[in-house]
Length: 51
Image (cartoon, rainbow, N blue to C red; front, side, top):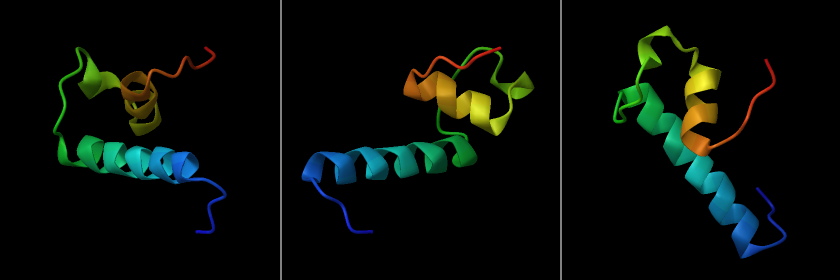
């Protein structure tokens, strides 16, 4: 992965770590059982998804 800046590399690595945490179940979100993987990622990352 050829990153242009250290900041972008850090953001990508943080996202990868977050996905692994979701997969391992190392987080607590109310209603996470009814959420898809993408919705869980968005909720933890603070991303607002369109309905």
